[in-house]
Image 1 (cartoon, protein in one colour):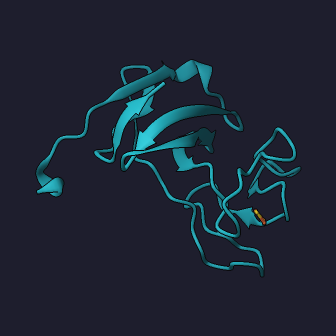
Image 2 (cartoon, rainbow, N blue to C red):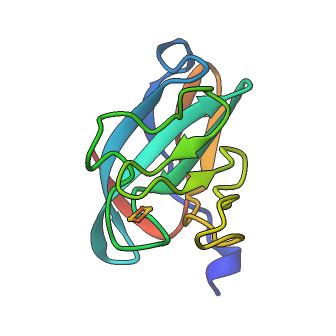
Length: 124
Ligand code: FES
């Protein structure tokens, strides 16, 4: 069963290369499909989400090459402005309130950040 499998680890970068408020974009194969992933650090923790807004199948940074809003406390889709919490990818906007970005499981150990999600079969 999937729950028993150990996810392959895809190392992405040294911990020091992903500071608070920074993000990286990764191309990956998620559930057999080519996707783009956002790997970010917020308040010291690393998070990853598929780069696809809950409102429409658009990239959060499709219009503006940034995913954090001007406060640095939220993620923001540049298309119509939905704001998400970085910790859970949940929309806190009236539009699509409560809907969540698809999270990808991350790890950080021995000074390395990466993905460790059994739904990911390739990452670059
Ligand atoms: S596509 Fe993201 S807010 Fe509309």
